[in-house]
Image: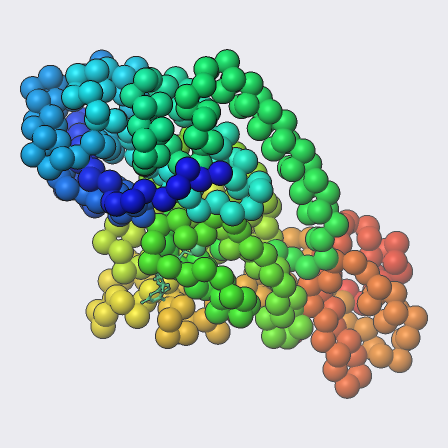
Length: 423
Ligand SMILES: Nc1nc2c(ncn2[C@@H]2O[C@H](COP(=O)(O)OP(=O)(O)OP(=O)(O)O)[C@@H](O)[C@H]2O)c(=O)[nH]1
Ligand SMILES: [Mg+2]
């Protein structure tokens, strides 16, 4: 589905806008991040421009004088791609393209993120989701310029979409969007079936800002081999893996796609199903790169996503990763925010496992039973219960933690073995 790797890195100009509540420094940080995104997408940042303006221009976002500066930067560097950190409406993008030289294409942060997803998605589901999001994004933006560029080189913003689709008429694109929607609905319903079948062990989801170290922790906690990279969006096809956390506590860990500021809406919607699955987890580990200067913003972005998915705060544990990079003096404000760990040195991982265990065993809906081994009938009934969280055989008793609905223990005639907590 890819229209071929670009032969060389695409020279790109970044544009940021400081207005309203955003300061210059914040915009500089956002442009740093945008630069990493462009780099991941295969581009090379050759210039960055920042305009301060009280309010954005409704037609072109930046003012006409500033468009002149963008044009000069493109001419001087040979760049043919301009990326805005702000979301551009389709008409703003078109107006900007009209105002710039003929061979320059304009896209925004969302367009770059979509491009990265298109390059990296591997599973059929992720690929379908990305193509859908990309066509939805591109449809109102389809201009001759894009079709022309895609035929020539592909380039940022157009990979993942079948090459011919850009050239053909909108009606066909609309039809393809409808087809992809249907296909996705099918994939999702078959996934829902799979999910229902495998709820035997409690699930713990690793979520958080991109590059926070979710996959590294997933690897440390489950010994599964997964892609770990110092790149944004290294993981696009989430993995789940079963492991035993000591004390007989069985858990399914899931790794997920990272969050980012301004994840495009068209992408949030389809990827929501993956995140929703994570949000249904018994426990959510919100992983934060504690060594990142913007860790608080990352934490906030993650909290917002989790809240929008309906995850209650008491199901969330904040994990401060990369503590090995934080240095000797650890700010109190940071330490108050969560549990310090390092996926690299292993610091704090035992504490993390213990915390996960305690949280799961104490979760509402989990009952703990202690049964003398001499009562074989009861032991047998208890061991046959589905949804076991933990089981430990002692010399004289067996202790079990099971997820069970109200009244379930009575039905299984096990109510009298119930104890307060896992000891
Ligand atoms: N020093 C240090 N580096 C870490 C730690 N954990 C992860 N990293 C590095 O951080 C980078 C990102 O790690 P990943 O595990 O891929 O991060 P992720 O959250 O899965 O990222 P995405 O899948 O892109 O969202 C890699 O270069 C890791 O080696 C840590 O505790 N300490
Ligand atoms: Mg990852």
